[in-house]
Image (cartoon, rainbow, N blue to C red; front, side, top):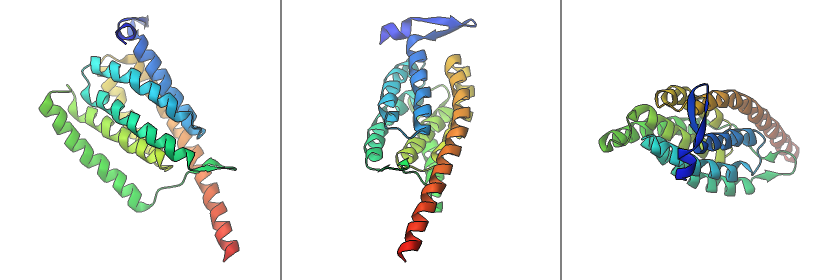
Length: 213
């Protein structure tokens, strides 16, 4: 891994390690695959977490490094969950979250960010504990919702992207910041795709219930 961190190339005068480049390309591929609700989303995510853990640990961003470990665990869950939610017509079945689920997601993000920021600050594990913590917790909320097939996970990713771009730039990770901007465009398209699929599934289920009643 040290080889991947120490070797790389320059783009427009900015240094990019092989580990950062490969990790962010894998992460970008995950968003692309998630739009299509394919099981390949999760093994590719595993590869991204291993590479990006090393990148963020070397940049002294404890929150971003720690989230890679958590993402790895959630990826295993997501892989398992999606194999159980296959539909012959719609692929992985997705739906819009209920009000209580949305409130839980919001509460988890706010409370989790507060706790994580205080922990990072106390341990001197990050030079920017609050945005670092927000990205960490937002990622967990997003991946948890993605594994559950909730459309709202895309909106959480938009929040993570908005926080992540300036933090990456301030950390000198310019390629990662650029990837986050690309993420934002893919996330908007992903939300539209999943939302459309969720409406089709809901309409089908409503029709089945009406026919059986």
